[in-house]
Image (cartoon, rainbow, N blue to C red):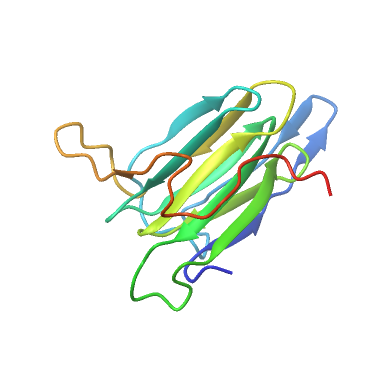
Length: 151
């Protein structure tokens, strides 16, 4: 596991009206602080990668569909520097992933329909000076193959 990454398994609570799923609470052991909440969508087969942050921690989950979430630790001082971690999250495996600063991440929609993801970062987005580092999805800096593994 990448140092500083935490996964909280989420639970759907069903009743006769539908379902409810708590994602992140201010009394959770992994809660740090609130910056903002946003939703992003990913079309089937599309990769959104790579990006990381210097300051903010992301708390990422999927509320509809399925994605492959891939993390790569690019922190030079980290005990897990260079490690890559992948996880499949979404409606079939609900989870909240804590992604600390310096861990680059990307997602790929692996379902046949749109995936909808929710992020609760610790910092609000600064339009004038974004806390964001980007690398192309196929960068040589991260040795990861986004193709589907059928073996």
